[in-house]
Image (cartoon, rainbow, N blue to C red):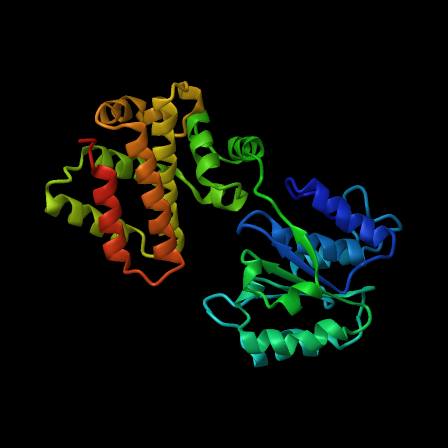
Amino acid sequence: MSFDNIIGHEFQKEVLLRASREGRVSHAYLFFGPDGIGKKLMAIGFGKVLNCLKENPNSGHCDCNSCKKIEKGIHPDVFIVEHKGIKDIKVDQIREEVEERLFFRPFEGRFKLAIVDDAHRMNASAQNAFLKTLEEPPSDSVIVLISSQPQAFLPTIRSRCQSVEFKPLPQGIIVDEIKRRTDLSPDECIIVSRLSGGSLGRALDLDKNLLSQRKEIIMKLLNINPDRASEVLGFAKSILSASEDTEKLMLVFDIISLWLRDMVLVKVGFGEDSLSNRDLISATRRFLDRQSVDNIIDKIEFLENAWYATFQGNANKQTMIENLVLKIAERTK
């Protein structure tokens, strides 16, 4: 079937297949969930289902001309709108790249499908202008908005779309796929799966170099002296230098968060099999001799607040990282 190469999301597949099978396809969908978990692949697969030339497109692998064209990105009736590197999607862009193309009748398929990636980046004016298309959609057309931030849409946009939520993939699926596709060790596969946040795409990006950086970050935090300002400031600066983009800096926060979680688990008596960073357990145990559970939980709460201030607020990144490093390095008095 047209979803046959997509890992997981069985419930979502069945919802979309049933809609196609029973003739209940909505004119607009909102696919929402974390980045990198397969929302765009599912939207492309849905386009195959809607335009497949087989009598029964709901089962089995399909290599019909329509599905092959959609797979290659050359089908005239299925198009993806992406705005990489642009903070706000404006009215003119939506009109030219989505609305005008949708009002042409399908050339080859039964449906014309517009897939708008990162659709939450439409500014308020673009969303308001887009409402008319959602209220009076062209016949034989389907719109799929893809987003990791559904709260950024106007309520009127959300109410006119059928929402389909996508959850992070289970850890077991991520581990199996990483084992199959990479040469990472079993322990490295587990670390990668937990750092991925349920995103197979993110997991596949976490190579041995990034795993080595993880170890370096944790070892420095284990040994840094909070009474030496130069160490704290230098390490904070090195984190920012090595994490020049938002995604990499988020990964640093995730690395520290998982390590703090490991410390809580060790403190309350869990075994090494429960830990993400089991290769660093000996050094972590020495650090734990100077920590209490309450102190570790305090660090976790501080990290969560720092994450919000850094990525959702307007806090100075350098200052927040310096304060975070100092907080993590604190010993129980």
